[in-house]
Image 1 (cartoon, helix red, strand yellow):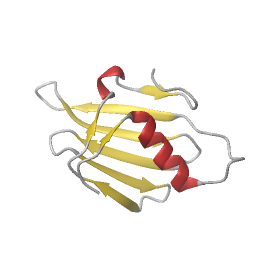
Image 2: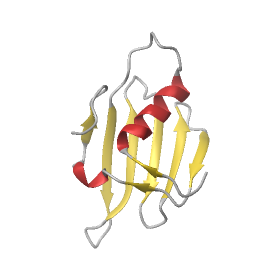
Image 3: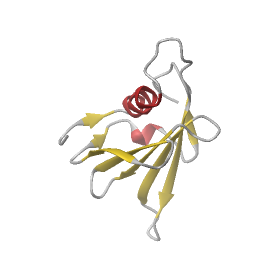
Image 4: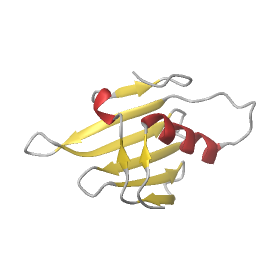
Length: 104
């Protein structure tokens, strides 16, 4: 899939649905970690869906505008190219999107 604008909540929902699509399963928090390069710009963003171990992962590379989604075993199951995450600037490094909310 190419050219899609997403919000952090959309990533949380995609990972949650891939993990378990049943309605009775509690929604999980999404952890957001921003990695900075030597120029203090965000080089990549790592997402993980709450669990022990985490139930899904995402890696977004802003320079390439690419989001890769992985299951809890580390297998990539979706690549979203030419994608922008519209509300990413609202989240700080090591932030958490609490299940059931739309912003930090």
